[in-house]
Image 1: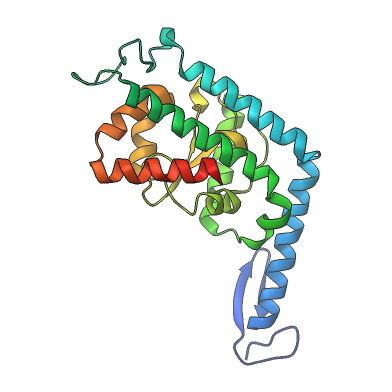
Image 2: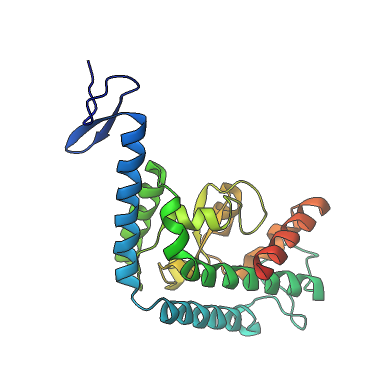
Length: 237
């Protein structure tokens, strides 16, 4: 019969925690995993150091990201230049340019919120096996490409966006590098956003300005209105 460390035998679950198994009742499991989570967030806080400085770095990243996204010589969308690399008939309009800017502003606000609220809120969110797999996979790819990397907390990122895709508002299944790794984008909290599978796979190594207008064109009017509402919510929060 499984027995918890507190001696209880009722409601005991087995948790496979390599290199051993844990036998915990409901009460002890809650205490155990909350304590582990606090240690994880404390480790990240120590690595981030001055959170105001980290937030300023996130802001600088997004200032540069917006500047690069709006450069016509990169074939991105502005109100004065045609959109390169997209299907026939998709011309740049003020609405298209505004959508790209609105998305960038929402991502910048969420990146600042990641650091501002981390100490008080991140420990409340618990990582899943998929969260750990995502982080390990990104770390490996970042190392292979020798890009700047800073540890990040996947469950807290997902919580910030309420598991919504940052680009279409659907159910998020992946984490996307806003400025792609293949273009030497950072593997850091300020360059990550949850994305649904269709958005992440279609974006690939494209920049946001190259890809987002075409993705929005594939959505229905209601879907576009919904994601624009999400961007406004994230920016204003």
